[in-house]
Length: 249
Image 1 (cartoon, rainbow, N blue to C red):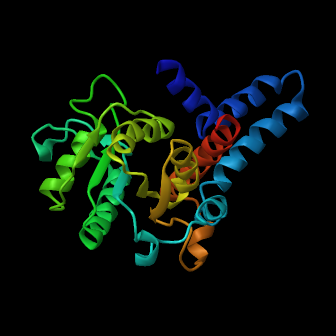
Image 2 (tube, rainbow, N blue to C red):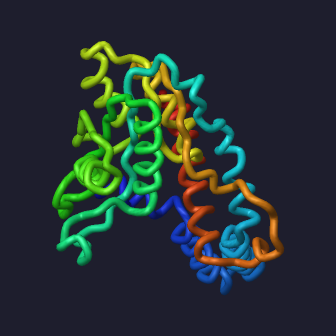
């Protein structure tokens, strides 16, 4: 897990670009032109991906799965919602862990789908680190039951990757005769999730939520912002993950 987290930080912005900029600065004494090109180029790229316009360009090709329709959901036997992140030791919840904004978006849409279809729901996700009080799935299940008034039938608490979400969900659902599922996750994450859930033996009905790249263009999208950088970060993370999953699976 430690090695995985280290690689995660090194290959994603801003750390990767800041490292390139530092290398450029180190090279400026011996190779000034190359050093300037590396340092200025890395900082310029960091500035560019901090604009919502570029973030949307990175996101749009990943968000091609259409929204769920009632016709597509017909014949499904269960809903599977994938976990995301966690807020630890939250003071407003008496120090308990709570789902982060990404997880809440998935929970909200999963609750909507469950209320409309009446299908039983499975939440999947383990612990991201040893300091978590409970698994991601357990905290999401509690939120779905208590705050969204949505019953959760199965809680899968071991998976730490999307591939494990699929295989561990299959270990619960396939023996029960459940093969056709409605899969809830972010639109940007859907292609990778569908890939591994189909490999695990499911017939998948995608139910994407949160389309980051949709919406009208405004001139403000050309200005850098922290929120735009976070969207670019998520898109780059997903491009890397999707490429790796395509090679591996």
